[in-house]
Length: 403
Image (tube, rainbow, N blue to C red; front, side, top):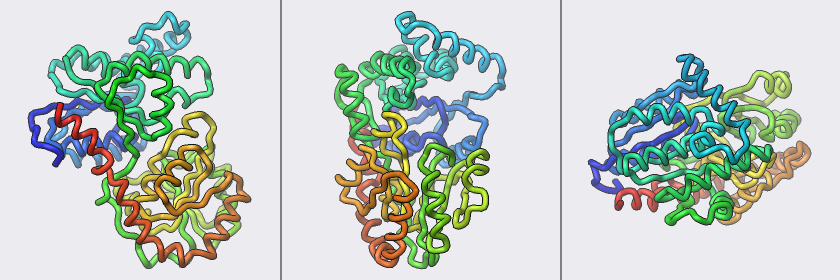
């Protein structure tokens, strides 16, 4: 328990849902443990995340969930928000006040604003996740005289290579983040870049790595399969994530090595890259705790992100923390954020240049070292306990509890 403030009320606002936003799940869980009265506004997405979100919601019996639809039903709200999003995105940037700029960046921003106008309840804290929620959260916090918190999980201006969209995102953040009582960031390099863009952001600011609850992880199993077990997971199994180079290397080295892929498999990717490939097992998206249990049966975690934009260079993905907490040896590409995390955390890792040849060479070395890798797994697992979410989020929840 972080505190005994049972009457303190907190509203989380996201433009996606729980299954799409593990950071939100962790904050909701810790807010409940802290004795907050918690409300979450989120969306039905019309895809695989809805079922997982329903399962997650069952874990939070005391939380009030307000659900909006990101789908075409009901049609009129979807149609109006889509049209306005398109029109406003075409207007010159200097013609867009904050409200229209927010809708231009994300059509769900309008749906959030419309729903917030109907809420009369007062909250102590309003916390936004995802850019389309930044301005609606700012607007509602000001209207209800609540404190505002904003979580910046990615370097959002760097998620696109379109200069206009990047500038729009930066302007939205410049208009919203300085109004927050605190801002949190998912990686040190993201924090540094945002602070350069927006020096007016107030303190305190927190870097909170994407660690998970330590209780979700089990000690590495000792009766692993004979083949070296590789694992990669994400919300989507698709092109542009580095798998195109990994799969041929695995296929060439099978049966000495096997790859577990976890996520929503796109048919076009399967047709192009997975037909007749050996040694690869596909798992549909798993509940978070089930995924973390699966990692205990693996040896090597793959962080194959290709820096196709600035955000990919700066972001530190969930998988990196999950691998460390599971006791896996990590094979990673040389993004700036990967290198900073691996070196500062003194973790057991190998670096690849992202080519299939590089992966094959590393996998061959790891196959030879398999027994030693498995002998060191428990030690890596113990070292990974430092990334427990309870520890990482403590400074933030100390702030929430004391204000």
